[in-house]
Image 1: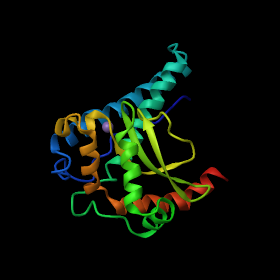
Image 2 (image 1 turned 60 degrees about the horizontal axis):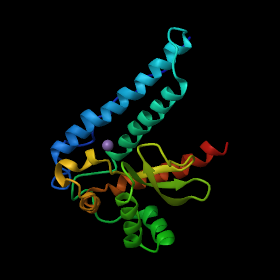
Image 3 (image 1 turned 60 degrees about the vertical axis):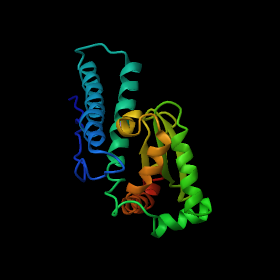
Image 4 (image 1 turned 90 degrees about the vertical axis):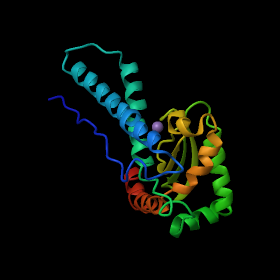
Length: 212
Ligand code: MN
């Protein structure tokens, strides 16, 4: 038997206009329905090629198919984290509490220093990509990463808990080429309770996952 399950586009946890005025409805709708969906479709297409190859029905360029899968699957996962990482203004924004705040204070010298470094990582991604706040399960510390495309420079073992998409499709309709303004405004919709939930989950699960 040869069988890989297919992925599905998850619904947004809010309406397309919920993040206005910081991210307009047109961006959210296009970003979710077209861009995120294209990564789901792309990942599934790669799986289908692998299935047919394993069944002897087609020959494939293994390197190309595996590159396709890495890019599209990572795109699917990053967007799946990105949507709940945000919440409508009022619910989102402000500063973190709990363990996230404790770790940020301890490691980065306070929220403002953390915010400046994370923002700088987001603003300076070369081409398209993401800034990522992740947890290192070995040390239970936070790490900031700069990821190109969806998958390049992503670091094995680190668990992402907060991500910002800095592909032009994430901001161009509203901010044109002004990525810096988009990044600054994005802080108004960060859903810190989702970040805290992900941190706790990662710290509880990650160690046994990576070090059985
Ligand atoms: Mn995107």
